[in-house]
Image 1 (cartoon, rainbow, N blue to C red):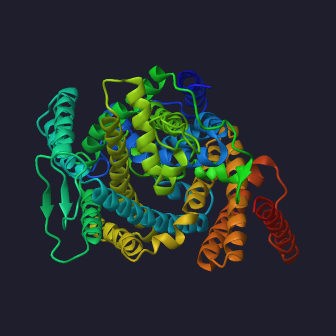
Image 2 (image 1 turned 90 degrees about the vertical axis):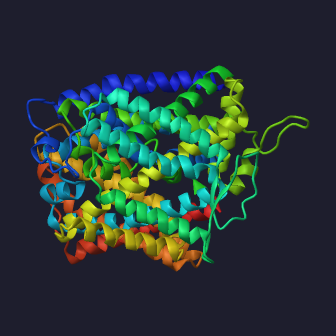
Image 3 (image 1 turned 60 degrees about the horizontal axis):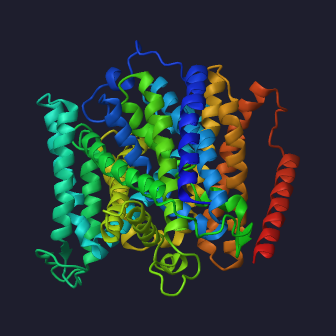
Length: 592
């Protein structure tokens, strides 16, 4: 199999999914009416509720949801299971689960006057479901903020060429936002100015790396290296603090000044990188070197449920519901824009995941490379970093398909594209966390609400506490997706709309996350990693409590038997969990 055939298959499937399945959801459920004012108009405040052009909003939504996940997930899945299962999950999971999840979350939030997914849970399930969901999301988002600050800080230390374009884009975005919203510039003229400025920043960054504390070994000829003194402090800590300070400022700044134009401009860079990957892969006609199937399981990683958690972004990711209901719904100009932004934005991410999968499966050699042949081995690069494996694979694929672009240029642009995703997700996550904290506590002061989440993120980042619980974050993310689909199903019941579009994905994702959490609780416990085992167990209990709360709603609608949790029922539940535990233990034994 080669990259050209798979790219054609992927593109056609995604386009058909957008037209027909997205169109079906629009007709059956969304039923847009542009005569109704959206929350962006009805609750306009100049800070969070600000209407945006649909292309600008698509840029914000895509840049916010597409962090490192749609790149790292497919890379890891290809190494464990081969490219075929990963490709099928990316394409069909994206069309029938991920895009449904994102689009209908956006629709529900808009119809509920900009309510977050936790508010929708309160209105359609119960206050208990809302409170437990809110606490979980606040801690999870604080963890994301801390980890993304760490990832970006380490990236800046390894590739200081990225510093100037990353921070320069902030100033350019503020200029573009001011031109559009204060001086009435045509949006595409302002975007052109911003895009040219971005290209200039990329070129300058390649010539003028910026470091803190020195010690950087140049990889090529520079004009000069700009070194910022560290005053005896650890450069990593300084970069992390600087990034967290930026996240705080970005989370309280009006969206029209920074968030909208920054993500819009970043999307030009992201789409350009995506197009290079698609064109490079299409024209390279490169045979995939990775096997289609690497086995149903390797080591302690069964195909189900692990692949459906390893590949989250790109197929379905709970974090997307937080963006859709946290920031995007508050900027939607017209109801008819929701399909492009919600459904289309998710399918763009699926395309990105497909490019990442093909980059490492076709651009890199599997296990070994032939003697006398230039190139890189997938497994050797993966030992260093999945990001590095993607960057090198992307560079090989693009430079083979587009010979006028060198390998070093292509790999640099791939890394810059990834870093832009991480930076946009960092500031979006900080803003969403502020809104969730306000929903949970009632504290409306945006500075206090934002500061609490940033400080918790700093605690995770600067104490390395994130390394203790990060291994279960993938499960937590997919748990958010499962719970969101449950909430959406309850919402659709409430408005008397068809529920099968969310119910079937909700059942699949619920079974997947419950299975993996039981698996992880036992596995980490057997390995003596009791903190991880406890975290997985807490997430499992959280999932079961919210599912129990939602069951009452489903029982009334689907005429299911009503269950009261009496002593004998608790014993049955305990027995079921024990059997699931034995099953998971068996999986561990077989896989190990």
